[in-house]
Image (tube, rainbow, N blue to C red; front, side, top):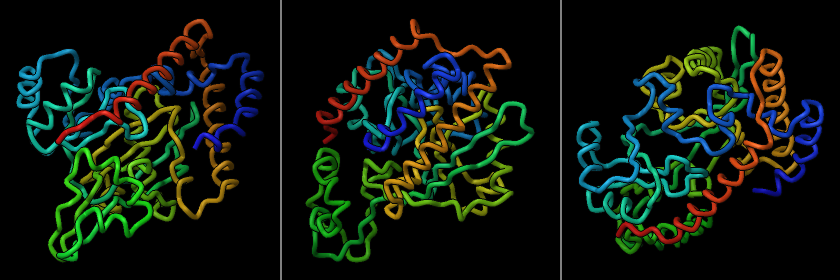
Amino acid sequence: MWTLYVPVVPLWAYHAICNRGFYTFTATNPGIKNGGMYNVGKMSIYELLPPESFPKTILIKDQIFEQVTDQVDKAGISFPLIVKPDMGMRGILVKKIENTDQLKKYHEQLHLDYLVQEYIDYPNETGIFYVRMPGAINGKIIGITTKQFMCITGDGQSSIRQLMLENPRFAMQISRLESATDLDQIPSKGAKIYLQPIGNHNLGTCFTDGMHHHTPELEQTIDHLCRKLPGFFYGRLDIRFKSWQELAKGINFSIIEVNGCLSEPTQIYDPKYSFWNALKEIYRHHHIMFRIAAENIKTGIKKGRFTDDFGEMVKHFRYANKISKLAGKLHLH
């Protein structure tokens, strides 16, 4: 993945010179800490959204487990539910929890602030990239990613492990899933088993370019949603939904996450994308990001300073390293 971003360094250097500062990008989304590039809690972004637009979510800090279960009950969140670090990334340590025992194991092993979130059982998930230039009447969609979850169909004879080995992409996930799933169970014939309910390509989900789903009605709905986020001009909305027609109408959907400047144009992971096409998309998105930041700075929005933001970046990378290590140790069974 990182090989895609090395060639982007000259673009960042160019904009740093033009805008007299490396941390110009923090002005892109002034309503989100650090523009949403690093060291920002997911809960602080959820709190900007209309309550009806995202799943019931609570933040768990340094609490004993009995307090956690009390909070979950008071919030009206039932099993199965989703847990994830408040400052997570790339789907690391995001888990679907089936019962109290699994929740307790997650709580006792994590030692980080995390979110407990209502599980949204809509069949579809998408990543929609939205941008709006400061002062513009409307924003627009510049990218749509469709997500195909890891799913196997039982034949009544083969174990989940054996069925996964038939698909090279699924086979790569076996070692990761062993700690959370009984891979030796044999699904009944015709039974569909969703192995990973989290829509992240690192977790086996297949991403494809979905811009053919773009319609003026969908763009208007997404623009209406994003305008409700103060100081949000650039980023990706990850959305669970029932159907494309209903999403366009603004019904039967839930925003799973809002990502700011760190957002990737995830359609680049479509197997049909070449390295050069993916790089072109990244350049296009980052150029837009810096244009938005420059316009916001003209209106008086302050850009980040080296004395503050370098330390924030260091904290971010240390945290990323910590949760990556934890991911290999977490066991729920």
